[in-house]
Image 1: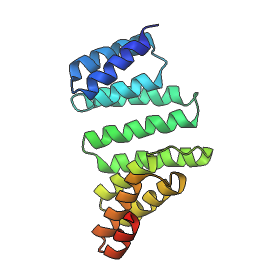
Image 2 (image 1 turned 180 degrees about the vertical axis):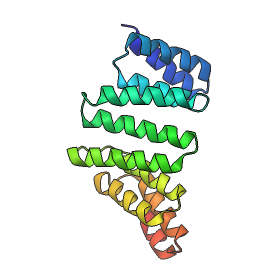
Image 3 (image 1 turned 135 degrees about the vertical axis):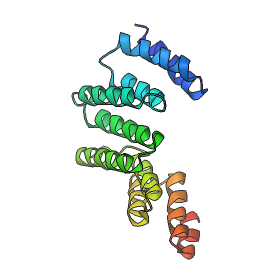
Length: 171
C-alpha cells in the first residue's frame, strides 16, 4: 500500500515547514490507513496550530486505536497529545497528558526515551522546578547518557539558585 509513502512525504514536508503539503500527504495516508494511530498522531501534530479541534479529533481516534496495540503505542499518542497542547499554548494540559503517558509506560515497565524529558520541560514552563527535577532524574535513571536530561537538570538547579549543583550536573 502507498500509506507509508504518503506518511513519509508528510513527515518530510512538515519538517521543511511545508504545512499544506504535509497535511495533504498525511490526510491521504490516513484515508489509506484509517487504523493507524501513528498516522493520525502525526496528522494531529501538523494540523494543531491552525485546526486544534481537528487535531483533538485525530488524537481521540488515535488513542482509541492505540489501546489495542499496547502500552507503548498509547504512550506515544499521549506524548503527541502533549506536544499538541504545547503548540496551542496549554502547558497545564501538556503536563497532565505527559504524566498520564509516564504512568502508562511505568506500569508496563517499558521505558520511552524522551518522555520524562518532555514532562520535565513542560513542568519547567509551569514553574514547577521540584517536579521537573524529579522528571529529569527519572529520564536519567532509564537513559543515563541523555545529554538533554543533564542539561535540563542543570537548568533546574540554576533557576533554583543551586549553582554548585548545576555545575556538578554538567561535569
